[in-house]
Image (tube, rainbow, N blue to C red; front, side, top):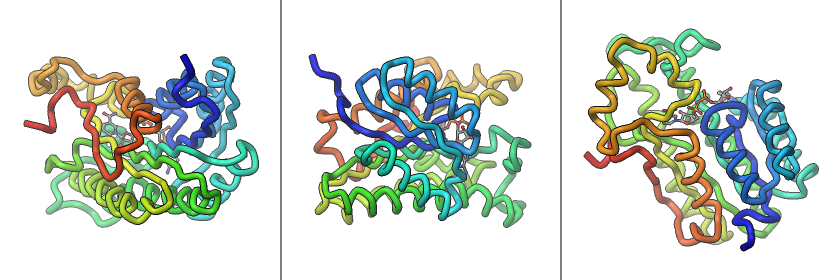
Length: 262
Ligand SMILES: NC(=O)c1ccc[n+]([C@@H]2O[C@H](COP(=O)([O-])OP(=O)(O)OC[C@H]3O[C@@H](n4cnc5c(N)ncnc54)[C@H](O)[C@@H]3O)[C@@H](O)[C@H]2O)c1
């Protein structure tokens, strides 16, 4: 049986960790060559090494996805080093769960939210995804061979989650961004879809896992009775990137054990 992403080239932002890394490895198992992009180059190189161990081509690149010039250079390297781009998975993002790391803001009600915290989260989670999608769309349109854009949003795009208002707004923005792109890019054979995961066990959520009683309360709200693994999201991205996902555009899929539907 042929592999599902044989001969495809994929760019994965946030590819140094968690969902992005799992997606890079899952795509490589299915034959894809990968550009692993992240603000942490050493960890991105670890992912690239693991991809190469699976027999695929991989390049790691340092990028801050909220900086236009860096994103443009990243996409140009996809063309020059991989020979083009078929799939984007935009997974780079920040959340309050990583409070204290690299300027990630604290939780708090919107009535007390400093504008700087709001802007910080929006600049990475929404502006960064917009800039990445835009540069990738331009490259895909110029190449004229269609493509798949997959944005990692969150269940928080639909759930008004207290304390992390700007995160929820950023993810709702990603969801609408995806839908507008789906309409605008359809004439070029480019699909755009979002993924809205529930709670996934990654470095992003490690602090929450250790908080007293948090996991028990969380799992009580998940119909399938467990948190997600990164590969649960990677498999969703694989479906959207593969031939089987060709008639999806403007959708959001929720690998979340049944939380968002409630
Ligand atoms: N883990 C969850 O429960 C969960 C749930 C819903 C949505 N998500 C979303 O999934 C995506 C991946 O999350 P994860 O859990 O794998 O987190 P993670 O922290 O393990 O990985 C995120 C990666 O993004 C990178 N990154 C952050 N800001 C960046 C920037 N400006 N430029 C380049 N790289 C940057 C980080 O260095 C990190 O490697 C995020 O968008 C997150 O909001 C996660």
